[in-house]
Image 1 (spheres, helix red, strand yellow):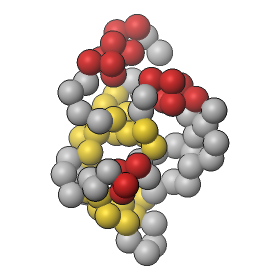
Image 2 (cartoon, one colour; image 1 turned 60 degrees about the vertical axis):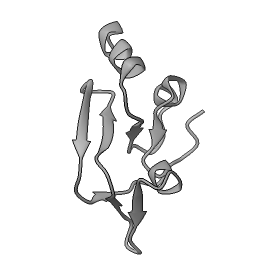
Image 3 (cartoon, one colour; image 1 turned 45 degrees about the vertical axis):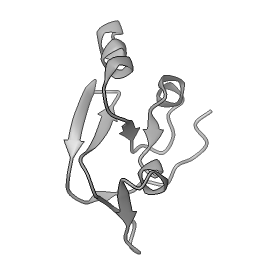
Image 4 (tube, one colour; image 1 turned 135 degrees about the vertical axis):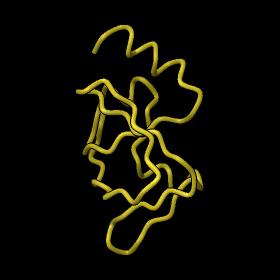
Length: 83
């Protein structure tokens, strides 16, 4: 990951989320798993594993070094221990 993208993450004005099964890098950068949107009140969960955002959600792809704004349903991937 480039230093420039790391700085973009650190200076981003909204909470950031990821949707992989576990990411120590995201954990170290303070990026929360997509499942945290539920406890934050930013989304609801359907009984078939989809997250429905109530507001735009910003999802980080650390491999592609992108931050995508999501306003549609997202298939939630189960989190494994990221530490």
